[in-house]
Figure (cartoon, rainbow, N blue to C red):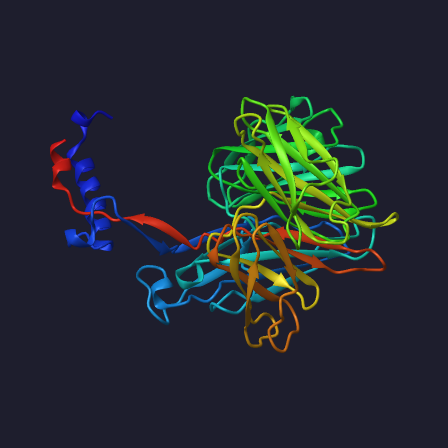
Length: 496
């Protein structure tokens, strides 16, 4: 539309928006809203989606829902006051969506729901008011028998228009399902691209996948391509609408786990929390640019940065997936893999993830750890168990002070907090203290207080019959606040 053809109705609408924004942000006082100024305000509404859990008849799935307590009234969403009610509810994806019970009713204390139904559907969740900032939902599944024996864990994801996954496979010993969930009323249209060691793998049916509104669509990756590819990078692009995405990967003899989305392509990536007793660590990386990427690999241990023997560097061709078998890289000392661009060429953005195996032959379990976004302010793992959860905190550049809080969960109790100092270039591993009395599932929140960049993950280990079943979830910033620009009324727009 040309400016000259802007209708009077359109001009009035624009003016109303500007004046409304100004009234919300102090626009009636020019001194209170200097040009270009902005402020951070807590979000007022949060949406998340959880994929359908394991179809096994031997599976038990727990959903834990939690919103951290606000530090002060200034941390509440704009327009709310003390005692203002909010809501946080998970709904099933079905013709007639049904709520799961119990619903979250207050900040600072988690609620949980457990199901053993093999046909349990995907979930769509919404939180608003005081329950929206930092709302987190964790999904944990234990399959205690049968060929799918495993511990699977994932943090339910925020719907978006693009996702990257490093570490998928269509090999004979793998069965990987991409789960797509649409939280909105209108259908979403999704394209799925698969990249192997030789670049883009031609897919027979990866374009134009329709995900029904308020519904879910599972896609078996091996039905998209004819080739058996051991290591794949999956790129999910949404043409219309938005979706949540996660990959459920099952490996013959090694259990199963959720492959969560990797952090956005970047020239520096961190994968925090490789267990001390990992027997195999496999790095999968993909170069998203038009140039090759030359990467430098470092391991942030408890005492400092070291270079993995024989794996100091990795060359990744443009548009292709590269792999490095790091073996038992941690050698008894839990650490974090730090990837940076070498100084040989200009930095090239990459995506990356790890496939981690623990246990002896015949009794092994796998888990995935994608490159993780940093914790700018706060992050939460909603479902933890006493003496079964382990946090990994990594400060690759500067010493960082971190507050770790365990809040009341399904058994109630009293919050427990402690402050941890993570030295520059190291990884600190700790078991979070359980809230008194320490029974049941409980949430753990990590807050960056000062210092450098912080990366975090949570490992949950529930051994069964000699199998070291475990799962690792990255803890990215909960994005509980948004940058809101200050505005002032400007009637000059009517003359433009």
